[in-house]
Length: 122
Image: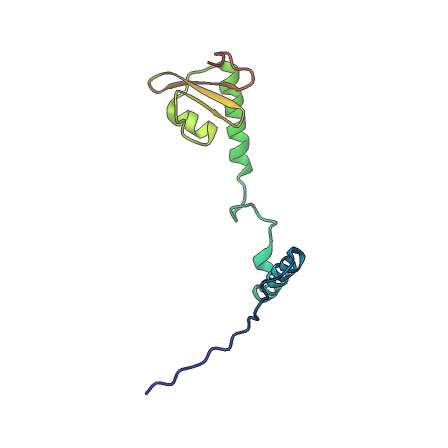
């Protein structure tokens, strides 16, 4: 016959009539205890948000290509617009990050600044 093991509970009961300040104190205390158990490395926010490093060379190239595309008004493919905007355009006019991509025809796009849009807003 297997013996049942009783788990010792380390949590304490919290009264229901807490003030907001007291509840916040309990939350803060719990967070501090969790931080102490996991160690300081787990709670470091100095890295990029996704946990990796930013590729600044690729970012610089993307910004230069975006500026060149705006200045020249060169027609771009959907794949090129996707790379420059950082997301695939969802409609014939897509605005993202201050840029406006307008579809001219199938797989042909032009990019302009959203505030200096040469096509006008409809």
